[in-house]
Image (tube, rainbow, N blue to C red; front, side):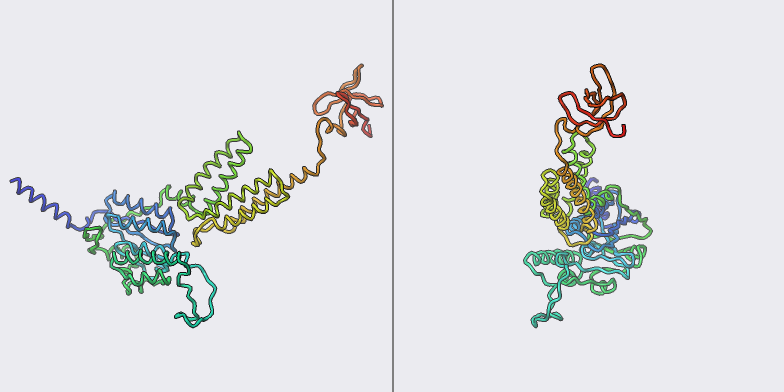
Amino acid sequence: MKAGLRNLLCSVLCGLCLLPVQAGAEIWQVDVEGAIGPATADHMIRALASAEDAGASLVVLRIDTPGGLDSAMRDMVKAVLASPLPVAGYVGPAGARAASAGTYLLYATHVAAMTPGTNLGAATPVQMGRPSVPSMPDGDSDEPGGNRDNEPATAMERKMVNDAVAYIRGLAELRGRNADWAETAVREGASLSANAALEAGVIDLLAPSLDALLASLDGREVTVGERQLTLQTKDQSIHHQPLDWRSEFLAVITNPNIAYLLMLAGIYGLLIEFYNPGIGLPGVVGAVSLLLAMYAFQVLPVSYAGLGLILLGIALMTAEAFAPSFGVLGLGGIVAFTVGSIMLMDTELPAYQIALPTILAVTAFSAGLLIFTLGMLLRGRRTAPVSGVDHLLGQSAEVERSEADGIYVRLDGELWRARCDAPLAVSDRTVVTAVDGLTVDVRREKGD
């Protein structure tokens, strides 16, 4: 009896393992839009985990991206490969693209689909994608005009390209897609339209809409890990997973322009607090801003040489204010600050560069502050040094009291005994001509 129950239980469990994905489960849609960066990766990775917890049957990544950071892309690919749920990559709507990092992500998905009117490719590492000056024919090149711009120029670039080629070929072989074209997309920056991609075996199917995609996926078998699953997408509800506050906040502070301004606000805030201790607000704002900037920089491709030049520039401009060198330190600080700001982001991706107007505006502000400080110092140098009671000479004083022992005038809020060659009365205006101990010599102002 017990053996029969055990065999029945084993049969049921084996049958469950071979069942298709349940029709009543929900399909999750996760959008991958814009430049791929830390915020995009965080959103997608957490969405996959949430979909698993919710018992979703399928996750559809709707892709529309010009590319992005290599580190963020690899984190996303790892999450897709490790997901226990089937993941479909869908480039849409019409006019969308899965360029550069988006191509790797699409290759990693269990099912790759595109909308007509979309494209993918141009997966060359960005350091290889910079514009170059056309060369003259040399007779040795197979390309028209002898231009070899697609070839890696340095050992480091060759390493990067070969690494990217091996990576995308591994993804293509894992999913049974065209690995040769994937290599071409990396080495030569090749791109394909949706129809051409289907013909070349780069993607699995075309779908003009999400509903059409789900209809095409119904009954399709996919391999997830070591399991064979049959997708059942008919009559299933679709849950769209939007960006939450964490991903939106991360997207804001990892914007290179925002991170740059946070860093400067932090540095200037702390400087103000150090030179005027006790104020509190600049120090608190500066510390919070600097910590946020440091967090953003640790997930962004930051050049530490650029960061060092920025700090050197600020130090030189600060030194100019306290140890004036007639502008030498200040000018050097402005140059170092500007060059460091341009070098700060160690990538050629336009989406992760600091905008030039932002750099110029901050540099102009710093230069204006320096010029204002120098102007104040120069005016101070032109003013004759005054110490002791000599500053009283030439001041106007009003007679406040007239007594038997003399007259008294008020200077700087104090009463001084006054001497004058002419008789004076209360309220007469006088001018100080000399100071003798606690007595001042005065003369009547003209007109009195």
